[in-house]
Image (cartoon, rainbow, N blue to C red; front, top):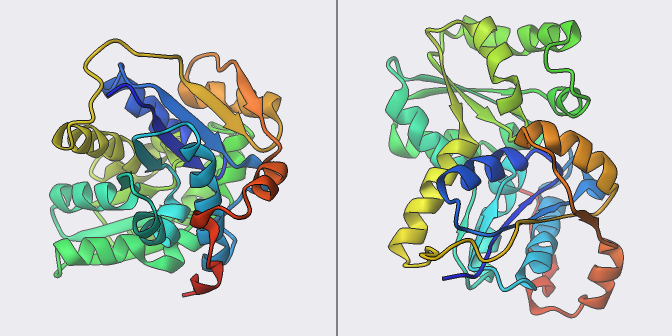
Length: 286
């Protein structure tokens, strides 16, 4: 099926998922939306994250997508359920695939999670892990400073290394043997994190695991594009296209061109009566 796959994130981090999807699904067209005008999602309330996720999905639906990937840990933690309820196409987030792999990889049942404040507060990874492995001990560590450091490109900077050491210290004290990189920005810090925690700790890239699950689900649903890639990937943002291209090129490890900035406020006003956005008052805080 030649219809594209839609991918959204609050910003540029979801491009780590796009990178993995492109590797294992080279014949699929990807349409990406980065809601850069409203980043970060990680500090917002659950209700607002749910609203933003529905609005992001609405933008991508206009391209007749066949599958939606929520390439944002915060939105996956807080809004996946409402997206699955309201959409008629399959949806995959980044939490479940990462949790499943962590359970498979851990040797001592002590699993750490690093992520945004909202992701850690939601306990989404913890719930998913305990459902699969009730005896597991799970330790969450919010790391709110890492996203801006990654977006600044400070991957090997001493400030970043010091910040990582401070965030990772409580997890190492708990003797975790597996850590989930619970934010799509964090794979860019994987090398630095591995140096700090040592080779005995397994790092789980939830974006990589999500791409694998998406491929499996597409095959099971008979939605795989069997022919050549129908069109080039498209990238849309709600704020500066130039800034996104600069930072995004680091994430994809190739030049990112043809990024289009859209007036998202205008789009939402124009589609304010869309059924997907009705009854937002039923969204809840916790």
